[in-house]
Image: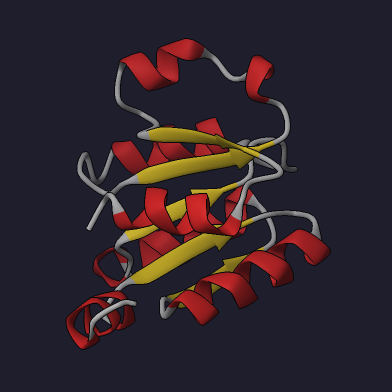
Length: 130
């Protein structure tokens, strides 16, 4: 059972959630909030970049889909990395094979998670950054 300290730690963390599929975006937002995280939702990579640029210190982690209009998850990560080398960026995708392995090797992306994912695994992987 999580301690009060664990719950307080999660409540202080804000995730920028990016997915162009409204069903997945709402689902993951609900799940992350249920885990105790604060969530800002964006419908594509460009909206996410603008949200990040407007308040870069507001976010503790970016959780992004890979295939999206305007900017893919990797393109978003590369633009964020120009500003912040340290924020954890996690891709959650059904297209793992399409992602450039170089993005992991050069630390543009910290982790790639494959959809579908067990909720317990999602929480474990996100918590590993805090």
